[in-house]
Length: 225
Length: 409
Image (cartoon, rainbow over all chains, first blue to last red; front, side, top):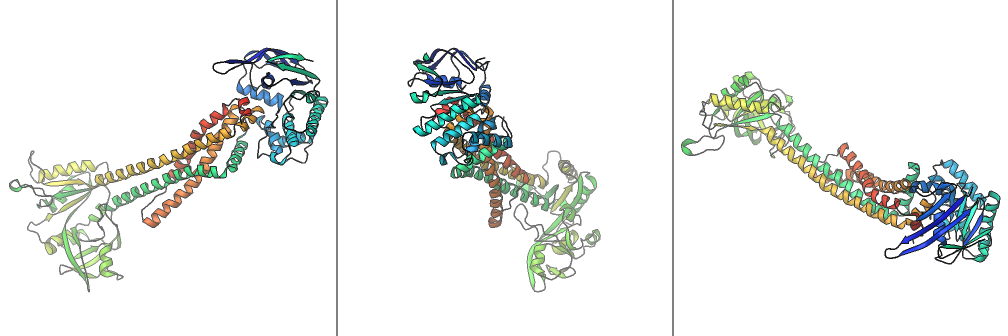
């Protein structure tokens, strides 16, 4: 069964006078273990698509089945739980909590999953070890380099055994060398743990890491290879 | 939902991050709570003082004054006519079932001499029951007896002020003082009662048998005439029935026709003082209410800061939502933050309020009374303020859209 099954979704933003179609008639299927790169110019709808995939936003029309569950009609709290259990996010700007140590940042999804503090500690350590930050548990974000911060974010995405990692321009704020390291880490996670990775990027050489490429233009998929 | 202790830790961290701001926010609550505690302490101190004065005068008291007559159309003041007699007092004791004790008085001011000291004071001739009427005990010596009254014995009880002024450190029991040149043996010293509700020194008094006063000190043209009859009712509930019984009895004894005015006045002292107590209650309430306003203002301060905090931390809220925080997770986080601010403020405010009350009574001599109730009330109120004023910002935070919150700059 497809992990992500999107059928003819549209997203319309109502800006008062005008209605903007950010997405229109998008259908696609993403299977477990895929590594998909999503490309397209700004305003093409790829971010909106990612938000819908990540259950941060809901489509105006159309159907989105996540692991067989129809997202439509779920409450805020149901969506929050879905995000907590199935989806890990990686952002361009890392989005770590400031003044909060690396390990506490990684623990965050586990807190909302209602896990005990000892369990949280253990899982967060394991996740940080996996991304190569074994000696940085108690560093604050501002004591870490950009690459390290992104690794913390990846650890946070991993920690609750998410099936999907949604990465929105994960290398946008990083230099080339660090970008390569981060991408290789994602590739490893995809290949070794079978985590589905969906990546939004501008850069063609980053997109090359994906085994499948989806190109957006003006709210529709124009290329899917 | 995530556990509370963790939420408290998150809240404490947020408070620690903005130390200055948190301190200033708490200051509002601190001032509010300490104002409530201080004001209520001042109010209940005043109330207690009045209650003490009431009990010092004696409880369930009625006072019967002689007079007002209207000779030839000229209305005279109370006490101008000697209409009450010793017989009236005895009749009241005998015939009014609601009355417990009766003490007629007769007296005036006179110079008292002991050795080379002299002192001008009020001499009150009365019966032994006076001490029961006024709930007044003796520090030393004994009360005079009905025999002393019958025989017009020259014995006296001295108030503390009189003792202090005449005797200094000498034990007055058994000593002889001269009142209007008549020698009296001191047989007892009264307990100190302090000031009366009207500010008179109740201890500046000498009690002598009423007959002695009438016959030997303040002679009277009407034998048996008394100035005031003090009456103690059996209970507070029986005060008004006692008043009625006395009025009827005296009208009958004085042969006052149905349409004629009384030639005496019955005053309910307890009622008068209860009115004062009530006004002290109102004052306490008023002071407390005014102080509560500052607590509410402090609460608005918390709300203000929490709103700023929610706006500032929109991104954090977005992150938390993205990784799975539910509506109540976010809401609780902010409510507990507000609650923590207000409760810490409340505790400091209580300490501060108690200190201010103590300082106030120490430096200004006002009596203050800090009741555990007012402390508990102030604390609960500050907690309530935290929840009440924290809820809206928390609600606002929980209703943010995750994507918008994440994108917030």
